[in-house]
Length: 86
Image 1: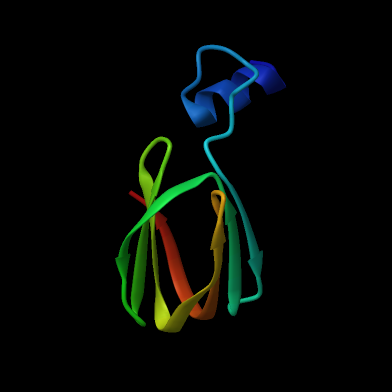
Image 2: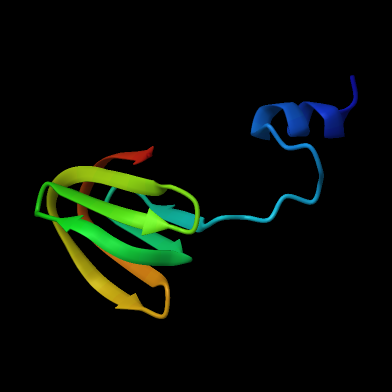
């Protein structure tokens, strides 16, 4: 099995290139930058749940707050413990 086949298997894709649903960049455990966010579903200092084009993300931590949310870009700051795809 070749490299492309391995990538397809990991992402359960039948065709490449795969269109990215979102982009995420972590800055240590204190900031998270996200692109292609549709909406904020839940917002507390311990949990932020967001909706994406396909699915969503659940960010859990402490003292979480939204620093920027504009045109699909979202910056979350605070002590980030986990980021889960939902």
